[in-house]
Figure 1 (tube, rainbow, N blue to C red):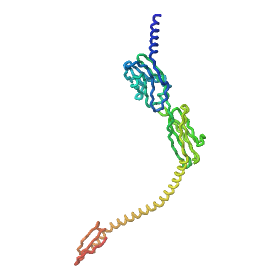
Figure 2: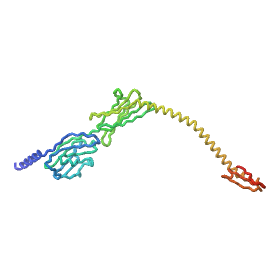
Figure 3: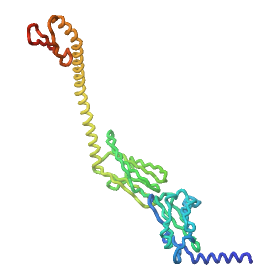
Length: 330
């Protein structure tokens, strides 16, 4: 009996202390967009001036699929203590210390990831101790749709492709301008990224009709969100016809050019080779002509005026008893 009494007294004291010191949360559920920042808050009573040396704050997270807790941030006796901070939160989680004097423990997490979703515990120890739970949900909307347009000229068909990333897995459906679903020639696939997002790609193949437009829609059932992109078919159909006409014009033109230019190139090459052979023959004849002229004109006083080479210049002879030259052109 006497052994149980001290334990009962201690429990009563702790209950009374907790009754005077209570942690409150202004918001129990937070929803954050993937890649954005979030701040979660819990409040504690501060009588007068806050003494940081008496304050300890701890934030822990428990994933929805995990049983173990992760240490997000710890402030021990007024000093930051990150020795046991989980690697998933290093450089991303911090406490806004300027809010502590007001009795606010505000946790900020940057670059929200899917794994940040779960239950968070805010534990405050300041002349008393108490804690509260806060739930964080992370959504990844299929906000950005990347589109691609390809044409099969042989089949005269268009291939429209829509691609986006999000979570959870979205359903993709195609519609025409009459809001009728198109299921024929639709191919939809998905893969998982390293961040746990779904990379969804959907393609529609059809023969273009200028009277209809098509749209792709990503429907996220769990978030009750949808994102759409509308393809203006009139412009695309004209583009396909234009490309086909351009190709039909370019190919015959290239063939005609080849037929006309190729003989001309052969003719110019042959002409160039003929000139080259003529020059070589002339160079070979020049020394023989020079020897013949020397034999015919022996006894005469000669003077040579050369412009360039001898064979391509002039050879001049001073005639006996005359004051002028007689020149011979080679």
